[in-house]
Length: 109
Length: 228
Image (cartoon, rainbow over the protein chains, first blue to last red):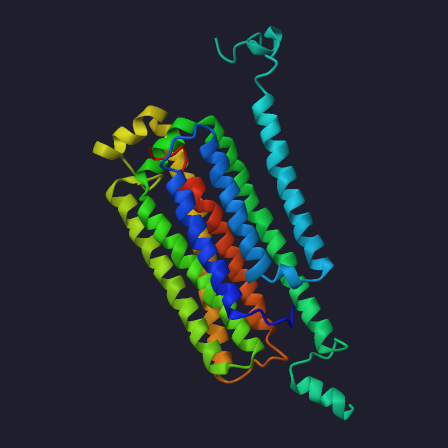
């Protein structure tokens, strides 16, 4: 826990930054950017998360141990989503051999 | 017990720690490890959301168009406001300002309550439009038109995600409100000083985490595929 007292002004500026990003992400949703709508939404959400984590959650003043714990958490989350999606999204790349599809004997006559 | 030890104990030092600094370090590390388990807990939902959003994209787009973006955006701002007052609560504890601490904690509770209220209005609207999967699923009229392109079964899946993710988030808010009430009662008695305010800091970290979950839920559920 940081004994460092952060000035009130910093918290207010972070708050207004977060509100600005909320307005931005809502506004961008009304403009057609194709697939980049999703990218923009996620990049903005990620920036908002960084603001909250660094300032409101005092990660700027936290010990290295706390940072390692957080990075490890996100690493496992990335594995979870990354490996799952790489499975689903590549299943159609190679079709299943014909012999796998409907050669099984019918279960009932 | 020496005089110095007795003094440290009065300030809130538990017996198993050498000094207040070590105790604070342990408290903070503990809550961060809990938050990492929470990341994984919500992570399972986010991963399954990612799969179905990719498989049923048209239905998810139609489903998100049924939600009210204005209410979602307002709620995001309310929740960010509550994070600000929570951060200021911790600051008030650090600066020994008991009055401000109590006021900021109560403000955080009020903003949390407003968030849950707006959420309740939105849930009610889902029952009016019959888009509650399992309980009341019979979309009609304008709602149906918005859902139709993606297939109704696929759209039902979107609303399963909507209710599971926002519901789990709301449950975390309710737990947070209970913790805040406990903090208010203790703060009024003057349990927290600039030497000992770990409960305020720890509940604050939890509250900010719940805020971050919503920061991702808002674009993923409300803003899919654009509104143009």
